Image 1 (cartoon, helix red, strand yellow):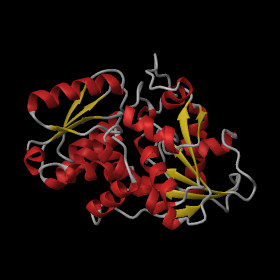
Image 2 (image 1 turned 180 degrees about the horizontal axis):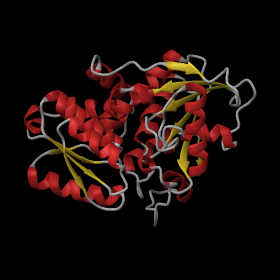
Image 3 (image 1 turned 60 degrees about the vertical axis):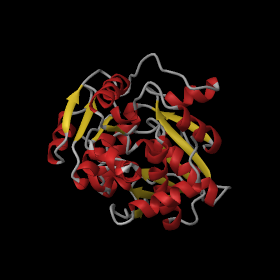
Image 4 (image 1 turned 180 degrees about the vertical axis):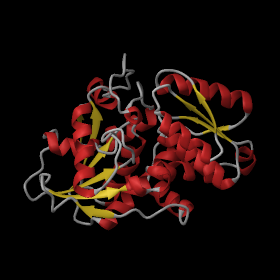
Length: 312
């Protein structure tokens, strides 16, 4: 299933009032300025610390009430699980979240405040997801996919509409890619509203899931994950996500873990923004030259997740 601009606009109406309208700040002035004229969209200040509640809330509010009443389940590298737990807590629904062993203990502890049942299963997200699907089939809880669900992609796409309103002169959007739901939604919205805008995805060297899929011309499964950026680390994306990325994303570049940590420290030192490695990935693409803008190019970056794994 594809996602359209109408889907994204309907999602915006559906989730209105439930989430924060996160700010945009200019990257300059700074001691070590980034190339281009850079705006930072601080979605790390969204409720639960990432953009994920947009998609989770839209998916929940799209469910039949009888299906939602049985509760929600998902598998996550951390941020989507927090979003589903929060959405369930807000609606008074039970939630069961499956996490891989790589999720930091500090993030696992956050689930308790939202009343979620946490099950740590598997070494990577893909293994946790198999367990979540089995649980959904057995329990009857509604399963919300973190990036392959069109309702989730539409919810994430609301971020694209919001960003273009805040940075109307943006020429290029730099967006981190994990499973690809964020960039699929944002790129669909951005290209529909402003066809000439450039959308560039950023993946870890240790988890180039969508870059390899694009090179192969089909969805591929990575043999292994080597990045420590756990929220950017599925071995395989989803067909709907890949189709949207193929249609709307201009390029995908890679950054390594040290570069993401350096970018996270820069965000903290220059702007007091506590971004996890994934949240700093798009900044790293500018710092390393993985993406090279013109001197006067207007670039908008989504700082997509809060955390301290890059600055600890």
